Image (cartoon, rainbow, N blue to C red; front, side, top):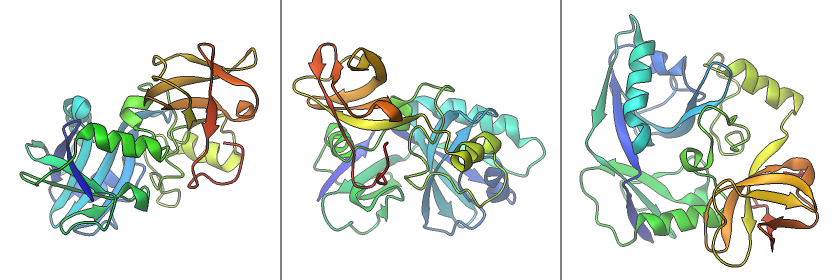
Length: 264
């Protein structure tokens, strides 16, 4: 079992009588049925249905705690405050840290990651003994082929289904309205998903972000982030098979077992 602190994540607490219905009407995830101690994964989208903020939603007795990208926390506080209007809620940053555990039985105090069991567990608080680094955690996530929505998406340009939110329990298609719901539901219903984030494997260091993935001479995708030997790329579903390369180096798509048996 490895435990690491994620300095790339930060926390926001939303409290008040209207906290759950307020967030329920905004986020891709059901918040009204969230129970204290439960953890769910979701997002706040733009009205056209593109990703603005990925987040984890922790249930509390009197509201929720949101686990968000540290670099985007202030922007999310501002966005939620803008939507608040007459809702009886309070939105405030929390100073506590986020911790992750993986590679064995989930320790006491951690809650299973709602995306995949193999991602381990998460917790937040002021102290937790660690024996690994955030880089170790990112390597584990990358090995599972799971995108980091903040690092691997283009702000307000990527649809959540392109980032596999529908495969990682990040969208509740039965909850009713949320911001961007019409576009998201239509993409899922009609199957108009041309691109998916996929893991690609290669020899040597990761290509630069934005490097073009080619299928022969045709553009097949774009590298997002990665490390030696592996990266996440936004790939065209109809060009996953064939002679793939990046910057003249051969690459291959590695579809993880949590992705259904279809072409991307």
